[in-house]
Amino acid sequence: MQWVLQRFEDTEKLAHALDRQGVNYTWHKVVPFVGELDPEPVIDDPNQVLLFGSYTLWRYAEKKGLHPGVFRLRPFVHEEAWQPFMLNGPDVLFLRLDEVPARLPKDERAWFMRPVSDSKEVAGSVKSGLEIHETAARVLKLEEHEIPAGSLRPDTEMMFSYPAKIQSEWRLWIVDDRVVTHSLYVLGSRVVYRPDIDQDALSFAQSLVAANPGYARAYVLDICRTADGLAMLETNCINAAGFYAADLGALVAALEALVFID
Image (tube, rainbow, N blue to C red; front, side):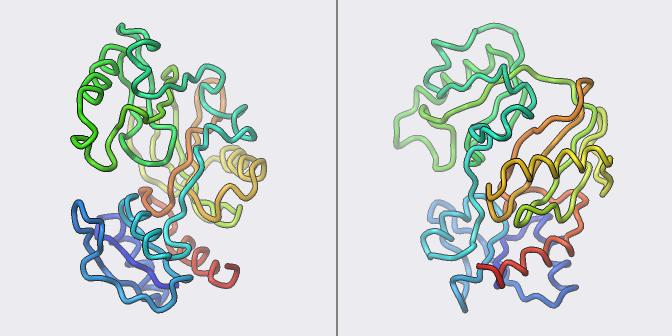
């Protein structure tokens, strides 16, 4: 597999894991507003290339016909097999940003909001209805040509739900429907990166993967524990997700094995 990396703190960690396994990789910058890579990678086999860095690398991979390239995902909230297990699943509200002024209460009530797609226009966060209306107003007053690529747009579909008090959060890396590594990243109110996971949480994650086989060849799954039990938070693109305390050696080995399957 040929690995093409955009330099970040996390991809530096990935490079160390690649070094330990003797896997070759190259470093590149993304040219702003153009989307090309500098230097332009010399591709040996377009069907054996992986790109890690910012999510926008998917555009380069698609333009150049690179595979697997970047593992893009369907919106996890629309996956029926997972809906019963999602945090605040029954109470989720889906609105385009241009529907917010008419349909979302403009008050102090708090909402957890994030884009439905895995497109990273904005990170998931908790905001009041007033703050969400202000965000929508800023976007809606812009002309089409004034909206930067990759930013919120009037037609961006958003998910809104009640915030929940989370006791712990884990990230798991899934390759070919198998959990290959995992990391704790939130414990109570603290950000904590450890390779630990409770056995029931690991079993829960494995059951989610088994409930929706073939969702993607590789992806990241985030789960949490609340006072009500375990729940699914979201999925993320494996090429652009933080590694926390994952076993990157195991992840590299699993992704390298895809060469023999594709």
